[in-house]
Amino acid sequence: MTIKEIQEEIIDEFAMFDDWMQRYEYMIELGKSLPLIEEKYKTDNNIIKGCQSKVWVHAEMNDDKVEFTADSDAIITKGIIAILIRVFDGQHPSAIIDADTDFIDQIGLKEHLSPTRANGLVSMIKQLKMYAIAYQTQLN
Amino acid sequence: MQKEIDMLDVHKIRKDFPILSRKVNGKPLVYFDNAATSQTPQVVIDAIVDYYSGYNANIHRGVHTLSQEATDAYEIARKKIQAHFNAKHTHEIILTSGTTHSINIIATGFTDLLSKGDEIIVSALEHHSNIVPWQMLCERTGAILKVIPMNEEGELIIDVYDTLLSNKTKLVFTNHISNALGTINPIEEIIDKAHEVGAAVLIDGAQSCPHIKPDVQALDVDFYVASAHKLCGPTGVGMLYGKEEWLNKLPPYQGGGEMIEQVTFEKTTYAGLPHKFEAGTPNICGGIAFGVALDYMNSIGFEAIASYENELLAYGTQKLLEIEGLKIYGTSKNKTSVISFNLDNIHPYDVGTIVDKLGIAVRTGHHCAQPIMDFYKIPGTIRASFSFYNTKEEIDALVDAIKKAKMMLG
Image 1 (cartoon, rainbow over the protein chains, first blue to last red):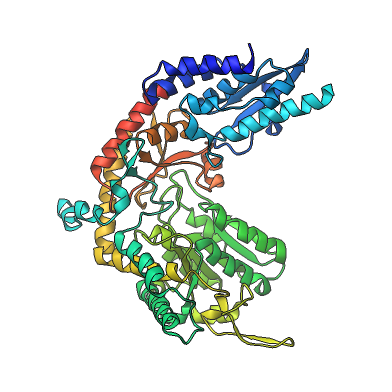
Image 2 (tube, rainbow over the protein chains, first blue to last red):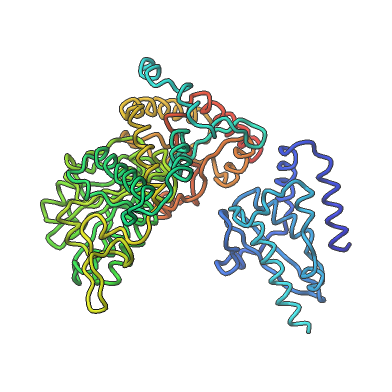
């Protein structure tokens, strides 16, 4: 699936919920399905700055696709990073770089998009895209 | 005790604060982040509007009417602050941008007064802003930083403090009340013991001033600092009290207008107190509003405030502890209306996010006091801090929200 298709799938899933509690409960569920980072990659270097909770992300490229794993010590943050990874995992670096992230607004998580927000959703997106940019450079 | 609450008519008081009637995420706002910033009563908002709509002008220089009026109002505010803290002289009150600015004036000023091997003592209960300026001072001077440790209850261990004091000690610094835990430190004892070895004492009153009216002369403290925004005043303004002889000893902090007497390219002579430390155009409106905020709080009365807040603290502590798996950090008998806690192994950020959705403002994180969090080996806490305009019903709403968060996150 393309990034756009996955985003639309997520929008459809979130559209089923009537209130924020259900959305958050679902996000917490998604957090549990996050492809977990290997312990050896849980280093300070892999911590995303700007989050009140700790978020570690590791990326590697296989067959020109970027694969992400991550973890967080906070469940909601884990849910947020899980959504992002579901969107970007297994995609070509250039697709990740070009992707917009407007879908976050549409699944009712707009409040997390503010750059000053302590959970650092913006920092997470930036970090995932940075990995993609780095791998794109390798491909060129 | 019920009588005390009646004495402070909380429902009448709440009407003074327009923000308390707003909604957050569709729910009535419950504001429990008072230890970070207090809310602003209408009289203070009016003072700010009056200033900008009536007599906005620069102070201490113009001969025109507006400048005179603004200068008078600003200097009246300084007198109100002096009276509130019971300083001996008006010029011992320096208006600053807040506690951090005040602390930096002292920390920078001590650069010339310290030599290699001198010692500065700080407490383990400090806010970052209270640690970093002293580390920088030590780097500049070769002085050594010593720390009064804390115990499991979140109290300073005074027996260790006794052993740290010596004739090498030049400055002792502690907060009056810990922002992260609410512990009230025994500052009288700390000050007296420091003076016995000839050290100066700086007390950070940022967290205590909303609850306690300090008497700087009775305390015999050398420096005392506070911020207006925790005292129902605006942000960006605060005060530094210093004993006259100390303030005369310290060099100016910044160069600029206001702080000079005469300037030639060869030599500048500095203005006297308090202007020596007030370079540039100050937060005039903020200073005036600070004075009005103190009037407002004094009109309610600090005894009534403390008594009511203690009532909220006891109620909140009891109700929160009824939640299974909830642990309170900072359990000193001497504490103010701050409850710092965690829920099982749930991250405080998760809890904060859920309770915000329910309209409740609490602080989550390390509260700029990482060493305290390291002591307890936790990433942070959820901190609910109560003010005199909060109610028991709001505490009930917090308890319900925490239970809901536990259900969702547990």
